[in-house]
Length: 180
Image 1 (cartoon, rainbow, N blue to C red):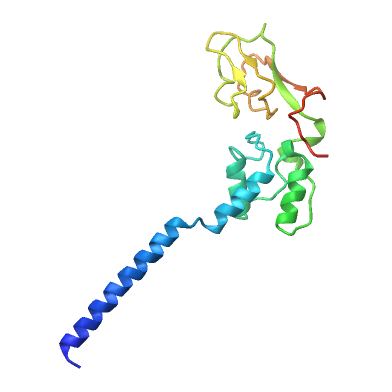
Image 2: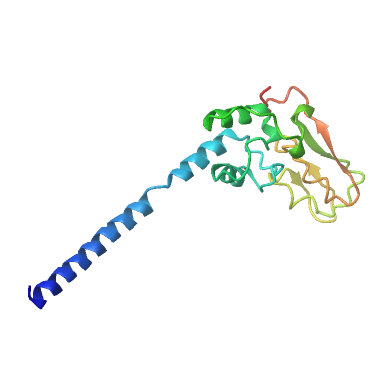
């Protein structure tokens, strides 16, 4: 074999490797990974309250952690037992009870309520509300849009005058679909 034949074979192999590598890279950029579909499926089973009671800043990060196998499926009290049962079926596991360390689903749906006479307008509750259910401006009274509130309790701790409390949702509210 001559040196020219070996050189031509090396160039052809390199060009072929570049073409195949480029095609694989293009295909990988066009196809979503299987984990994204699993995360989307898990996220669809969660109640989308973005309450952070599970220890994650929202339903999507919690779904991603479940898909990676980092956490259990029993950390979502706003959803009640329905998401746990659905996730257990998805992963072919036995359903388990909700972990009480992350909240109590048995207390019923709650919404935040601000005692407007005691509110000093400090605005500390505004940035922690994951669904922007609290409205107001600095040094002005705040209030809660009950239809948006998920009852996540995140607004309670930052309030320096304890003017926020959680109250039960009246049964005539149609937006709460907590499964029993």
